[in-house]
Image (cartoon, rainbow, N blue to C red; front, side, top):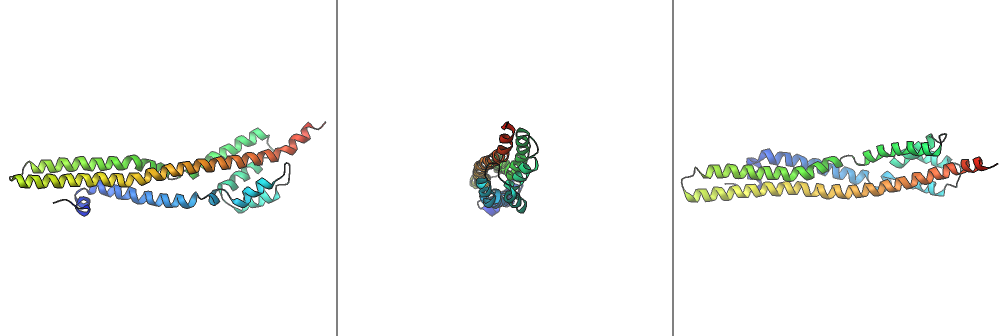
Length: 214
């Protein structure tokens, strides 16, 4: 008779195994994103400080050195800003935006899988629920004794509920993680955009003043 998680796993392996793999991969992605999306891993503090301290039209020697030493998203965007300083400001800004879109894709790595698990988990659980009920009601109809039918139906309902709970157990953490990471990435994107805009403004201030001088 069904009634425990282990028995449900055996009889509903076609649902429980995919859910188990989804859960393992989701946990791995969550821990990896927790490490990769730390503020210090995205926005190098010393480089952000150097951008704030840079004077309008000042020398960018320290910023170049700090951006070369690190492989954070901010470092790569700063290198892109400095790479195209010979271009007009608007064209430089457009080039940096292209690099920024690539960095956002890197920050969102793995979030698509979490989004898929959010919808797939309950659907797999529902499939296990329906198939479990179909199987148990079919076998109960062949039982000779009423008491045997009742025990089989109860066991089938237990199996169905376990499948449903397993699907929700996998989907809920993925949904929470996806929502929190999306908000965090949005905040990081705003900070990166602000720092790049500040750097571009300071890089081109001196050139603008020289142009306006008669």
